[in-house]
Amino acid sequence: MPVGKVWLVGAGPGDPGLLTCKGREVLQNATVVVYDRLAGDGVLALMPPDARCIDVGKSGGNHPVPQSGIEEILVREALAGERVVRLKGGDPFLFGRGGEEIEALLAHGIPFEVVPGVTSAIAAPECAGIPVTHRGLANSLHVITAHTKEGGIAEQDYAALARLDGTLVFLMGVSAIPEICERLCANGFSPDTPMAAVEWGTTAHQRALSGSLSDFAQKAADFGLHSPSVIVVGDVAKLAERFSWRGSLPLSGKKVIVTRPRNRQGRLCKMLRSLGAEVIELPTIATVPLDGAVLPDFDGAEWLGFTSATGVECFFALLAREGRDVRGIGRAKIAAIGPATARALNERGLTVDLVPSVYDGAHLAAELTEAARGRRIVMLRAQDGSAELTQTLRAKGANFIEIALYRTEYVKPAFQPRNADAVLFTSASTVRGFKAACPDLEVPLACCIGAQTAREAERAGLKNIRVAAKATLEDLIATLTQGA
Image (cartoon, helix red, strand yellow):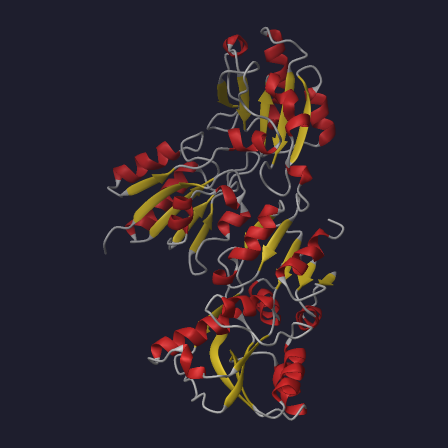
């Protein structure tokens, strides 16, 4: 069996938007992912659903898998021919023990690559409004680990640190805060020196605390500061109040799960991130074109009805596969279930003649039947699409045929997120997929794009269900911002 390969990937500080493009590319092609506690949920959700994930996380001195065990796992999986991603919080080489893991790989002749990551030493303070350097305040940066590899508090030359003209950033230092404050003051730092800590920086659960060397230990205890936290000492820490920016974003502090198919998530996730949300891309369904789908002869068809942007994509792909083009639809008019579907048609050069007043299957069927006045309708849709559409067409006496272009499959993610604030559903099938994939995952808020989706959420036992005013992504997001 050929030897596999290991990629040491810096997962960044937690926000999936700060994972590098190279890191995302490598992660999405992994067969095995060996991950740390500090690899953010949004990053972990990007791994392939069929990847095998191995948790080797450490927390507060608790090391269920020792470093030697991690190295053994990497060697074992690579020798078995796997594409192994060693996903490490921050950067692999900044107190990440990446060098030790490379030594183990070299000893067994295993090929490897290193993908640098954004370090929390800089990113976490920045997201709390603290620039680690600033003209006139700090012209250097010094990053210090507060713990040894054995787990104890690291010995520091505090006299040397006190002579440095710059910002001190301590990682893994929550339990060492009293000593840090005491020893810096004893070695020349003024007790009034500004100090700050950023807990879970860059994520929805980020918290920040400011003070000075003289009072910070007590403040941290009262605040309940926990790891992971980045500790900043120096004049730049006093800029946090003026430079803080995350709190002004309407969805700051919200961790949101998006359940749409992977190829349909882009626009929604981008909109959420622009509003400050931490987004977990957790597709619970996938749409698959039907191999046996055949388009009819459109002669005599007066209307074509589309119920999704996916259906539009599949329709044009099938036209191409059959060696036909869109001129074959003749003078048929076109109906779309909502703005997103209409936009997909417009982008392909087709003008939409009808969009229902309410963006769901029942209203599309009712208004299309009235517009068609007995003329032939061809509905192009999913194999397992809404029953309401078909039932309403029949009840209204419509002259129609249905062409199934694709089917929906449920997807079980390789990883389930923790402590999410909300989950967004854009169809009833995403609700069913979510419950199938994550039956025990409880999320405080379920936001649904329409009444049919909300009814499915109720049947699934979800609580605190909100329904968008209209079946658009903008209105779906508005259900989150209300009272956020």
